[in-house]
Length: 411
Image (cartoon, rainbow, N blue to C red; front, top):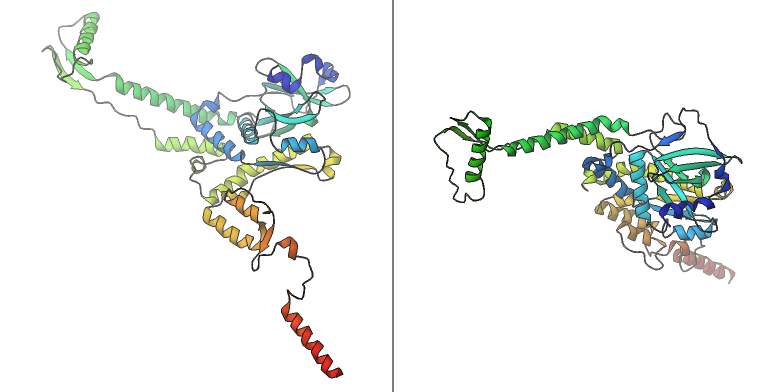
């Protein structure tokens, strides 16, 4: 069994509905998506650093299923998305595929009883939306090994970027082509300059040689006697037929700083990231802006797509939902975290374990309670209860004085 059979099952076991389908016609001209990666952009160091840095931040997101529906699936997805990936691996690959193709297909993994037990992100070569006789829509995939697979559209999670011309699919990354061309030209220039600077060491005029073959033989002889490893004393000897002997000093090629910054800015802006984030030098303000620009939109889109794939309309109406979220406070500096813990922790806004999570500490037993400044009573024990006489000594004393006064009057 291969991955294709594990995901889609054997050919003969595929649903009969797929035997007779027709293409679903979109309003746009082409209803088939030819997934294009644009000239192996991921093989470029600048592009890969941008895509990978973004993917590693998205890998920090947390996927949670809330609600009482599908308890078995909820328990499975609590630990891992499928039998081959952890959640960080799953999220990082989703981010990478979406950035490089602008289309992300997450398909259900099913057991022998056709029950969904997980999800897997796939990278097809072609995708087509088809319709069976019962009016159900299917996504039909073709992979680069020429194998096919299909899944019900409403059971898949589908994310898209740069959607414009197609009613369903995202655009290509051809907008990045001019920048990639600049990168290719610059890299070729650097390589040529470095090779040229190291090819020639000496320049001389040689007399009494008119035949090109004799000249080439003399050059070879001069090189072997003077420039090979056998010349350990460092003395350069040549006959008096050599004139105007000059040593050529290699010149190192310097990359145009402005041009390189222009290229980097184009790539980083395209993927919604900056160099400080890639190098781990970003401030909390920069990280917060990065979260708003790149991380949060992905989390919201994935939450909605996964919720639609897992739950029915009725189940979602009763509050069953997939939440993909991140603790935004993790992007704060240590001093800002300490201040946040003091301000919100003392007021019962954050629980003990939520405060510990800020500093990457493991949760403690009975730590899911909030406390308030003062006697630090657990909020659940004190809020909403009527005060006792022991908790209000002033009121008790006043009541006692009034009682004594009434007794005297009666006496």
